[in-house]
Amino acid sequence: MRLSGTPQALAVADGIGGRPQGALASRSALQFLGSDARLVRSEAACEEALHAANEHLYGLMREPTCLGMGTTIAGFVVQERAVLSFNVGDSRGYRFSRGCLVRVSQDDVPMAVDRRADRPRGITQCLGGSEFPLGIMPHVFAGPPFEVGECLMLCTDGLTEALDDSELAMLFRELAHPAAMVEKLVRQGISRGSRDNISVLVSVAVA
Image 1 (cartoon, rainbow, N blue to C red):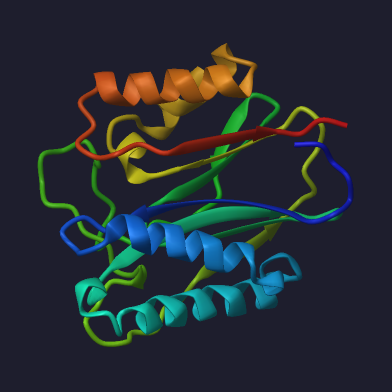
Image 2 (tube, rainbow, N blue to C red):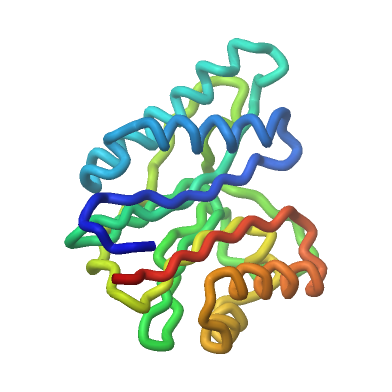
């Protein structure tokens, strides 16, 4: 990502398993947020955009085949003086700087459990995901500016159920090119027996 001073947004979404039209839900959420200028303005405006995206999905459920569809969302807004991170659900955002990988999202899960354990999974909120409208409590945080050489990563739970944060950090230290990082992360997740689709987005700041 070239640091131009103009706000730039990155996001991933993951349709909820066991619910109808997961691909449509995730695609619709990303398209809606991509067209909502509030997303990149401020913490408060970003939160407003996420609430609006949730309402948008429920509006699409007027089509009976879409009733109950839902999606997670996680993303970053790179501003000149700050990086906003946001999420609803269990898709995650990480920031890699000076050899350290820090998770900056908050999982919406019933309890802190080992994702790799053979036990039922669930989330406590998402965009949509119910037969009747439910509100959300988005997680939106402001962090320090994005600096040259730093990395931002977004991923779905297909990756983090297979690899823990220490393993992710090790891979980041070994690899420098974003494309190589994504390929290695996905391969490692699959080789570890991930039970879900894996989406990964990596961005490196350049001048």
